[in-house]
Image (cartoon, rainbow, N blue to C red):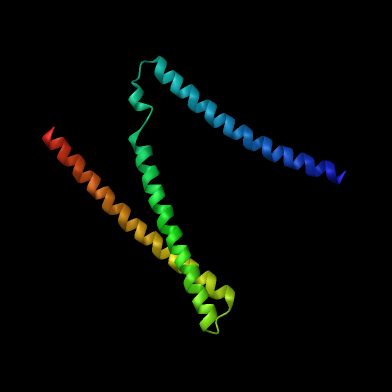
Length: 127
């Protein structure tokens, strides 16, 4: 009986995940087909915003990964050379350096956004 409960739980979990993903993709497909049938240009289907967000996402994850790895390294030094416990050394430095790296990303993203707005403004003036 316990084996049956485990099997049902696993099947229902993966089945619901598949169902959600299927619904998302089918809805997007239907929306796109309706847009194509109504004569909307194909340029609207592929947005440059998605590509820009992908680039900025890679920047974000890269900066955070660097921050967390520096936090782990500093945590190792604190654990080795001080009387700080292992858990406190690692967790405090990972969260501290991870937070600092998020602040760095925020500043970089703000600069990138300001530059893209300035470029768009210049493109509008000279077009």
